[in-house]
Image 1 (tube, rainbow, N blue to C red):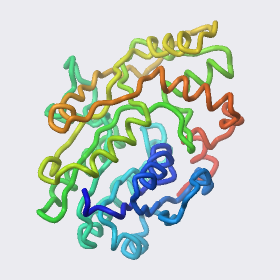
Image 2: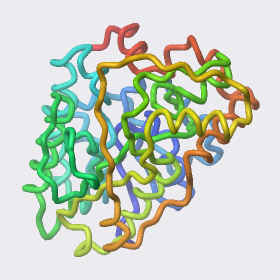
Image 3: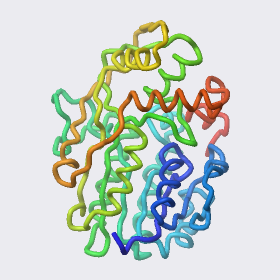
Image 4: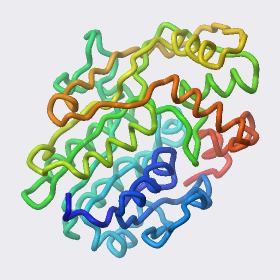
Amino acid sequence: MSDIKTIFVTGAGGYVGSLLIPALLKEGYKVRAHDIYWYGEDVFDGVEDKSNLTMIKGDLRDADLLKETIPGSDAVIHLACISNDPSYDLDPNLAKTINYDAFLPLVDIAKESGVKRFIYASSSSVYGIKDDPEVTEDLPLEPLTDYSKYKAMCEDYLNKAASDEFTVTTIRPSTVCGYAPRLRLDLTVNILTNHAINNGKITVFGGQQKRPNLHIKDMVEVYLFMLKQDTAKIQNKIYNVGYENFKVMEIAEKVKATLGTDVDIVVTPTDDNRSYHVNSDKIKNELGFVPKHTIEDAIMDLKAAFEAGLIPDSMTDDKYFNIKRMQNLQAK
């Protein structure tokens, strides 16, 4: 959209943000990159031209800072959160203050500041465990954890804030995979690839649970795509974004086959039997978005990054593992 020139991104220094910010800059947007930068402030060192980049270091719960820095932005992409259930459970009160309590004023401030478009990264975990073979956007939400419950409550609050001047859209991504400057190695495909390359062995917990996966380049492309859609098409809309639904054991076998290495796959029991098959036809049928990358691409991207020395100390450095970093920071 020609009227969207300046983008305010929360969680800019995170896994998806670290790839999204350079992509937005490449598209010619001015970017305000808000993050507390727990995982390092060097995340955009690889960006050559930073003339349109403003880094804003701060806590999402600091409403005064948001009131200072959001005005003049045309769109907000909200990525910031304590992500996934285990990280949330480390300190449920901290997680609630960031994931839910800070979300409400963020939406209000964005709207009051004249932001035209608000894109929210929710989660496919809001569905809970479904027996339906295809989990579509019109199924009832049955969040099983505080993490997913507050994601669902944020969706509801955002939808009620929509107006003729304030277009709101929710994305429900699946598990993201692949290489990014701020890398996570605590997500299924990335975990298995790291262990296959650097441990010579893949441990699969359970293995029969089905997981929907999404290449990080496609995740970034969704946000770029949404910024260009007509407001009438995406107002108050919710879209699943998760394409390759595979059992964890099938993903392990893909890792082994793609790398062409003779690694052992060891299966251990697990209490985590969440299994679901996310259907993402709606965004294709309504808007025409289709993904371009695969799990195999993600595995090969990670392999290339390991070989280039871009992922040092991948088994031990806490920056790759959200829970370890949060524990070590004793985040409050």
